[in-house]
Image (tube, rainbow, N blue to C red; front, side, top):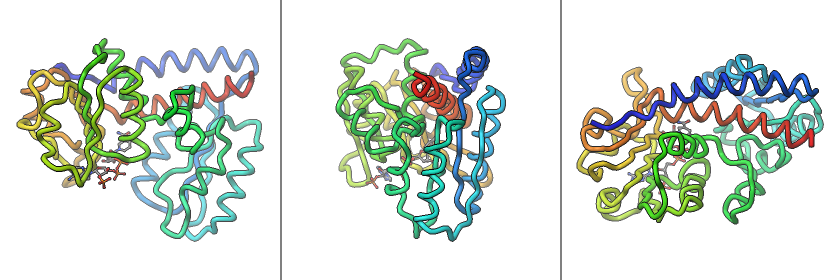
Length: 281
Ligand code: NAP
């Protein structure tokens, strides 16, 4: 049976550390602040935004949620981002994705000052990550790396296989694993003989968005399996990995819920605290 890598436990520990860190920063006159922009009424986005606000409250980070009308123009959205760029109480800005179809996500994200881009999606931060410079790292892959580090998993020279090539998970995860000296393969919807690749993986990251996509026969015995997926099936949240079957084969596995999702929020808090410190310097 695989060892379970619990994001819940790790995030609870981090919350305690972050609480203390923020309290001492506030004494030094540095008060981290996060602004979350939510456009429209998307149900899942509302839940994510609420959870981010609650996390800020627990840790002592000043937080504001800016709710904008579904029909807002690109110009007005970018105007709002500019206001937050200039607001000294705000150290981090996050635009909750996806945006309604008529809005240009890339253009909106590029309006955020790179030093306030706590999601790490700005082209400047992405470019820095891809060229090995210090950058704000996207929260989900940063959380995955944190979990692997805490479990003291040796990554040097290991075969890492990532299913999914999105800008927010798959690609940055590949870069972070490459930085840790893994040999990295990225798979996607056009990959041929997908299971041949996954069966080679010492570290397998699933970031697809398809419930129970990764089955036991796709996993090398003893592999580290990280499930990033969040899928709702019959009112239940399940990952991209068939957990019940894969845990019998894998060496390590992350559960859903209680795995990577928890770490994503913790890393958002981390990025916001780091942004506040960098801006104070
Ligand atoms: P995305 O942008 O939709 O990307 C999904 C990727 O999966 C794409 O690269 C796609 O390939 C690939 N894919 C789809 N079907 C495939 C197939 N049959 N075989 C191989 N590859 C396939 O999704 P995302 O934003 O990266 O998110 C992925 C999952 O993680 C979702 O469930 C999302 O909800 C979840 N997520 C969780 C967190 C968290 O905090 N835990 C954070 C972010 C996302 P193509 O590029 O060829 O289309």
